[in-house]
Image (tube, rainbow, N blue to C red; front, side):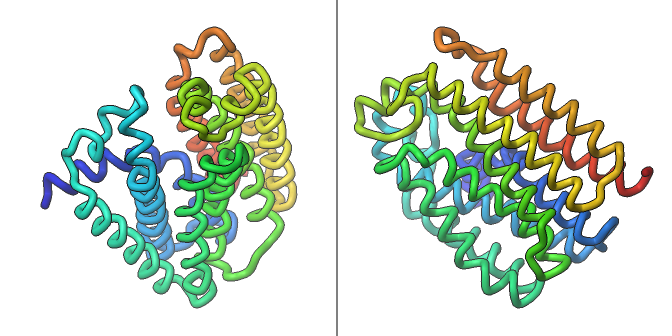
Length: 284
């Protein structure tokens, strides 16, 4: 079982939790205006890792037939047979239960919303079968992270959390569009939908840039709504510069640096936002 858990962690790319977890922490620290205590910190951590693992595993199961045909995804554990579908379903369900249990330990509002969060996380996997808006559904899924972190501390919806969620939604949609450029020809041949498959790489890169302009605006407005200080806003200028650089790495005829733009740079951005929030709270 230990080896299967390792395979499962690789299947769901557990390291990609770096995208959503810092924003959940950001919502949590903003709601508490500082350290919220170990209980909410641990519960938010467990909930976020669990729901993201649930979403990724469900995606791998839903897309298994597609992954078997895509040359880029031949090394995924379900495709290679390292993990069987039955085991994957059991572990996926277990992640869903862990998420609900963590939500139940937070407060009644978070518990009531937990099935909705799981539903949104699962639906994303099906959207590319019928709409190019799939990138924005994925963005909305990760956009729930700062709202969830906020609600874990203060069970009420507030402008800073919602504005930050919108920023995350456009941020994720923007870099997911870049990632999808790799599969433009494959998706089109398979009748799947994405911005690159439906509108071409050049148009998609423009729309990805537009998404990240929205990201920068929403991050700034979220900080203003929360009463953030100069450290936060100075850091957001650096985040904006990083987003601009991200779009210089990829050209319509050169996608060789997609992984740098997709994972490395965006992982740094998410951690930079959290660091800015912490420094702003404790030093400003």
